[in-house]
Structure formats: structure tokens, C-alpha cells
Length: 78
Image 1 (cartoon, rainbow, N blue to C red):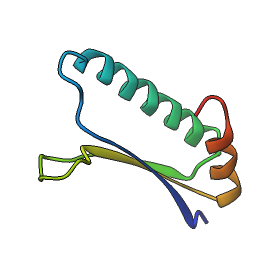
Image 2 (cartoon, one colour; image 1 turned 90 degrees about the vertical axis):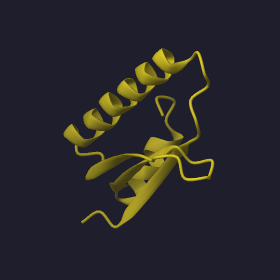
Image 3 (spheres, helix red, strand yellow; image 1 turned 180 degrees about the horizontal axis):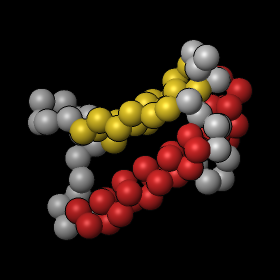
Image 4 (cartoon, helix red, strand yellow; image 1 turned 60 degrees about the vertical axis):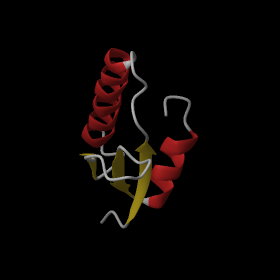
């Protein structure tokens, strides 16, 4: 059972870079999906936040075993 999680958050997209931000988001979702297919993580959640007065615009939460999450976080791909 996956008892740990890795939180990756981001702020507002810079005006004029919306297309690049969308491309990076899509690549990230593909990377996390591959990690899940390869059983390196149990699951992940992607959350986009509505404006709320804070700096956080969204986050990804990756669920898995601590050793696997540590390995992913230390990888060059990540």
C-alpha cells in the first residue's frame, strides 16, 4: 500500500507563456502516467485551483512508497 505522497505545486502562468505552460503540463501528466503504468507509483492527482488570493495555482500529488518517491525525485527525468 502506498502510504506516502510527493507534492509538486506551481504558481500563476506568466502571460504570453500559456502555450508553453500547457505543453509542460501535458508532458508532466504523460510522465506521471508512465510512472503509474510501470508500477513506480500507485497513483497521482492533478488539481487546478481557482483564484483564491494565494500564490498556489495548482498542484500534483504523487502517491507511492517512500523509497520509490525518493528515487523518482532524485532522477534526472524528474
